[in-house]
Length: 164
Image (cartoon, rainbow, N blue to C red):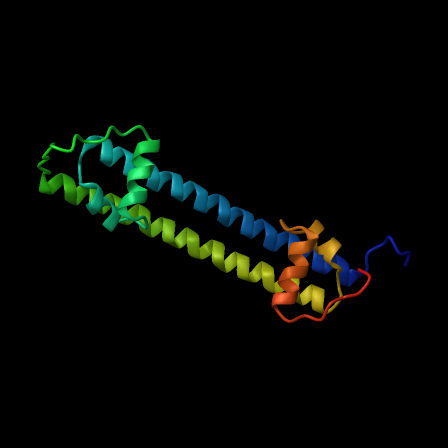
C-alpha cells in the first residue's frame, strides 16, 4: 500500500473515532438544549413570581445567586427590598414539580455527555498507544486539537510517540 492509503486498521480506528465523536457531539447538543429549557423555566417562574428564588434554586442544579443571574439575564425585574410576597402553595408546588422534571432531564443529559466523553477519550488513548493513528490523524477525527490528544495520552500514562 502507498503511504497515503490508510490501512484497514487505520480506517477502522478513524470510523470508531468518528462514531464516538458523533455521539459526544449529540450529547453536548442535547445538554445545551436541556440547559436552555431549564433556564427558560427558571425565568418563567421568576417572572410569574410562582416561587421564591431560594426555592427555585433548591429544585435546580444552580445556587440562589446563579438563579438570580439567570433571572437578570432573562429580564426579570428585581423585587424592591421592602416587598413582601405571599406565594400560593399550589403554584409553588407546580413550579417545583416542573423544575424537578427539567433538572432530572438536565442531569441525565450531563451524565450522557460524561459517558460519551469517557468513551471517546478511551478510544483516543487506545489508538494513540497502539500507534494505529498518530495524534494528528486522531485530531482529524475528534473535536480536539493535536495538543489535547497528546495531553490525554500523557494523562493516561501512554508513552510518547516520537516524530508523529
